[in-house]
Length: 363
Image (tube, rainbow, N blue to C red; front, side):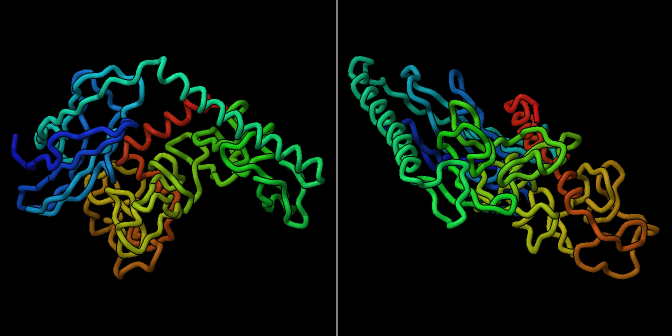
């Protein structure tokens, strides 16, 4: 096994807050004489759980030769866990040679403290429940009061732009209607800004819901193809948490869904390992899996992106938003290119599949 990385811990022993939150910082150094694409994974120790750990930033990132990067791992231990000492470490591997070029960082330990006895916690729980009940009753009461006062309620028209307390007047289907925000109580999707209502939960965003057309995706969602499955995902510029949430399959550093037309002005707008090519398209470098020529920076796909044969090369540079295919510059379908990015991002594809399962795989 050739050594490619050094991993050291800047944080010796993470400390959890009273709410179970903490963080650890590592320093990852590329010791090779060439730039490498590194894949980072948090490996839980005995009794630790994978869902407690969150990488800050992308799990795959470019490491220049002899350069070092700080990597932050955030911890979130849910209440009610038994007290004790738990461990984890950071694994760093070459994304192209994960089996031969990798390193396991030092194990870090953190303590989960004894939670207060249930008898002491009970009054606080009752207080929280009382506050929650008060807020819920207050919301319902305000909506009823608004109704009695003649103010439009959820799903009611608002031609003058005015709605009852806690509601927003939005334009839908050529008219204006009062809608509830995400998390607010509802009886039907027509009452929600998100366009979707889950009984007992309130207005929600149905990420991963199966669809046939855009009409099946309510609110700020778009019906996209995820390697054969049509699913509802967030439109560009919408707030996101993970790549799997977005129709572009890329939640950028600003936690916003990137554009889904495959176009770009810099590498920062492209989901790694894709890069912003000369024609301002997010395309894949050589060696990445592909299904179409225009998905590759080289303009040539034979199961993977490869150096283009002379017969495929264009005589002159192609204009923006086009690709050199079989010796001709052709307009590129950015959404099809975005789909090909999933071939090089199996974790994102798995995430989309998990969303579909969560939605019951029903439109």
